[in-house]
Length: 326
Length: 305
Image 1 (cartoon, chains in turn blue, brown):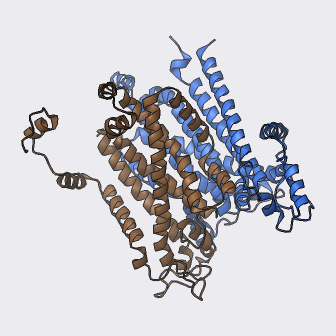
Image 2: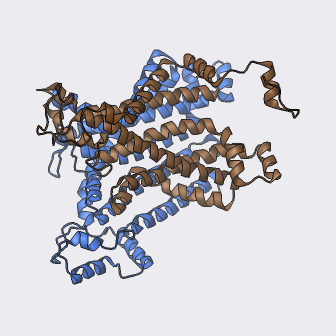
Image 3: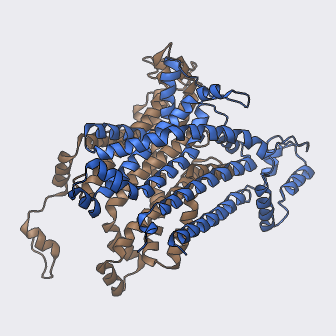
């Protein structure tokens, strides 16, 4: 078998194994709840029968391994269980399906994240490559200084600075990004502008610095020295000699930051009251609505693992040494 | 150089040819050579530490002292005004230095204790223990830490102890990876082998042979990890699931006063109020980054590019 295929398959197997263990961790979160949690959810007025019925509905009277199997089977079919909220002591169940809560919000979050990514990825590659090309120039130093400062800022600080200038002092964009299913596309872009801008600023700084570092790291290697001595121009050295070897680290950086984007949306969504999955998760954590927390965590973890997997595979596929084995 | 005993001492031999400077002079020389950004960073860090230590003396009012006037404007009585239930924001900022920074420091120390010891043990053992720890860390790192922290907080509830424990364990994974990676380079050295043949125990090899040789990257990592922990705790508190009121904390202060920002057109000072605690967080992380940058540059021995 070609070594590339072998490595890729090995990596895929690792990814699936990780996903399996992560699903066990997320599933077991319900195991560690304090014993009287059913009473807390149903209210103090709940009778013995209603709490018992509730526990039975969650399947807490069955062994954990069996429940894990059922849970995974349900999740694969798109059933994440029902929310804890909307239940009460009388036993009337007004709770909603977790999937119905998550689905519309997931669409909003993906819209916001992709909006940020479409702007941020090309921009940061451009900045990273150009600063590596003109390193130690005034341009490089000022970009470096700015990005080092932005990295150190908490997301909500960046968000509120943008709100202060672009929504409060000079009301260009709305500070509340409330969209719903009926909002037309143009309006959606307008409302999501500030959250997307915040996310872009935060990840461009990371990606640009890491791209620059990846290229500069390579510039110290002997084969680049060789290319330089044979009379290649600086642009040629970077684009033709350094970049092919830098794709793997750069792909890692991009995937890492897209994965980071998935997490970064949590804070940004809360700041701008954007109806996304991050805000849903925070609300669920505050009210300790475990099924919703599990559903959101599973989606976040899956996205994160898959993005990292893709990065690894790109890294393997673009590695000149693996592609042209001796 | 005072005369040594009759055993051979490398320190004695090297010390004899060049005059040994005291720690103090060496520090002064290093500081004089440090760039302005690093000096600026050190001054800021020192200032934060002083404010945190002397918070009760510096703050004009108590941490949770409530005044009858909520959302008071900036004035000589309330320097930065009061918050939504009438607590003095300036005093809470000062106490926040103690709470937010203190909790972050404790968490980082705990993370280094766990990650460092396990990382060293894994590097020395290099068999089943290493495999077990490395694979578990791989899995823990496969879940974004903020999401993992949120899941754990929803199970165990948001108390300061839980917050410290959860974030320390999650962050110790990165410390573990770094410690293991740098320690692996040192473990193969002859002097470690010699110590092992001499019959020294695991604790001795960790503490006396390996640790002193991997200190610089660990110290730099401590700074960066602290920033990360600090920002995570601030983010969790901002989201309302971290440090709980009435404890003064910068993250939750931003959230509580966020609505004031829309009044910036009418009263710029009021609009700036929610940004103050956020800026306090940002300033400290910038300062630490500056110092770490300089420290890495100084210890790496690389002086071009």
